[in-house]
Image (cartoon, rainbow over all chains, first blue to last red; front, side):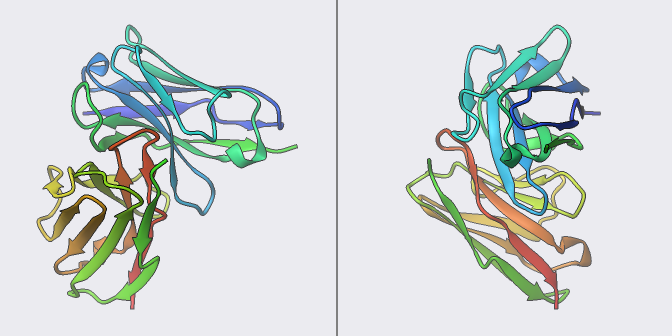
Length: 121
Length: 107
């Protein structure tokens, strides 16, 4: 059974930093592109970032470019999101998600339960 | 970035109704489009990818069509468990972008 379990969400002050983690199991982690997607309270979905199966390619939403860094450790079946210079508008539930097909971008077929990041003074 | 719009933003329907949701991309995206269903407090669920391919395990009352800039999600016979918010998503180019969502509720 595929499982994605996010952790690391807390309350942090504006300008602060945070690292989110996503532990993956039930599939061959290093075969798949992985994503972070966020959802502000009561709002829609916003894609944040992706990382290719080998970590060699990364992409970011304009809203987080230069502040967030996605990474993965295939030996630990784990995905990470380093979040710096946090802003109040980064407050959201952060999901990690697995791409449907290997080595490409398709739909996101498995999602974690999300971890809540609150940026507030 | 490619902008995705959806219409309507919300709709009220009854069990058994046929429901159609439209998604439009600001530029051509071929068939690089997915649809998701999200219920309150839950993670999104992939329904359709490649514009018209039904994800494994998704009931056949869901269907998708379109290519280029205009796409539709159709629920042929609405069931009680289908009341939710639906999002389209393009993955033709980066950044990946989602539509604003269409909320389907009970009439």
